[in-house]
Image (tube, rainbow, N blue to C red; front, top):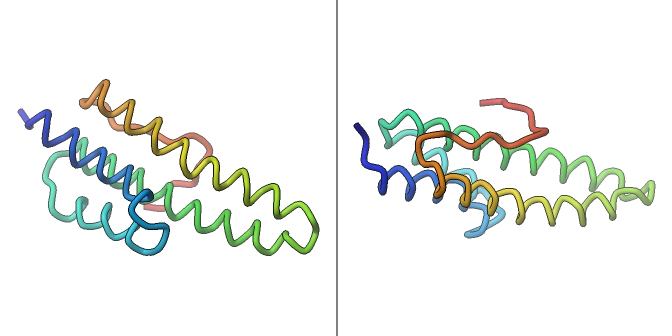
Length: 111
């Protein structure tokens, strides 16, 4: 059996990495947790967090390109809101049920 407190901490840290920095640090923390941990739930949470952060970069690039069409700015605002709300929901879900990995809706799972 894996330690529940350690599972909550590492899973929450991987989802909350976006709050430390929106640069490559937000991807580096889940990658480090993925490589260090041997807990399958923590690994699933790190992969899901990594996929979410990569998706945010892709959606941001698309919205940045669409800024010339005047629809990009509202998309960037929506993306900013989503990048704050979804990790908070993930952390709350992880703390409530640490034995289940959190799955973000509407993302491409690349990892």
